[in-house]
Structures are given as C-alpha cells and as structure tokens.
Length: 185
Image (cartoon, rainbow, N blue to C red; front, top):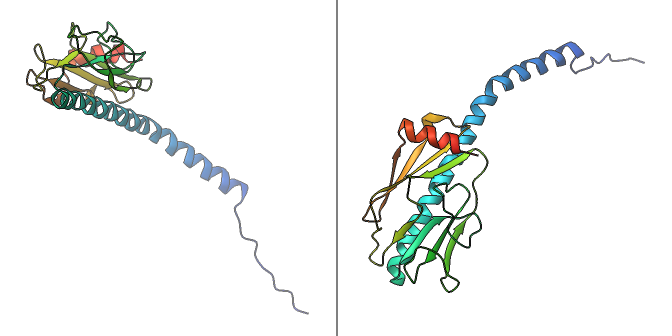
C-alpha cells in the first residue's frame, strides 16, 4: 500500500498576523480619505436637493400663477426665523403674500434635515425666497452656502438665486465657508 504524502495547504499563524497588520495599516491610511469622500458626497447631495427644490418652487409659481415661498423649516408647517436651511425646508403657495404659511395655503414640497455635519446657510437677513408668478424672485441676490465638516473647507459651495429667479452655483468665499462650518451640526 502506498501512502501519498499530501502537503497541508493553509496559512501559518505568523503569516496571518502579518497580513492583518498590513490590512490595519492600509485601513488607517485610507480612512481619513474615505471620510472626506463621504463628506463631499453629502454636501453635493444637499446642494443638489436644494437646487432642485428652488427650481421646483420657481416652476410651481409660474405654472400656478401664484407666489411660492421657499424657506427653512424644521416642522414643515411654517417657516423658521433662521438662515439655517440644514434642518429642512418648505415650499408653499403664499396666497396672501405675507411670507408665512396660513392654514389655507397648500404645501408644495418639503425636504428633510441634512445629516449631521452638513451645513446650509443663507445670506444674513434672508429668511425666505419668494418666487413671483412670472418666475422672478423678490429682493436682491440670496446666497446659500453648503458645506460639510468631514469634507473640509475647500469643498464648500454656494447656490445663488438672483432677482430673475434663476439658480446658479459656485465656490464659497473663505468667510462664508468659515461661518457655514461653524454652523454645521
């Protein structure tokens, strides 16, 4: 009878420990970059959601022939007296043109609060954006700065709504970025 000697295949304990050490070092190096990527993505999603909502408000104003207000709101029932939009926002038909949602004024859309670390701040003194039936926005330019603490200051961006009602975006100023980063939850 012939016994074939088969060599056992597998890893030794030393090989396994060395491999785990290498994986741990690589994970430690990659983790901060991954956090920055997640933060950048959250900020981009927040900016896209807000741009979509503002364009939706403008379109609703034109198609319904009404004033439509976009404003920060955490309860989705009335506008909050703040320039912080990261707690959520509300779009409603402002039938009586007072800038506040009454019981008979329909909600057009709402958007939930952003993830922790995301900040959205409007220009000081601008608590709402009022779209007229012709699609224009009342007042002067309003700038909303969007940032994420994990992404860092270099990735902050802005959304600007001009008197024409059109939405555009760009890079945030260092001052606006610092204010936004301080306000991010």
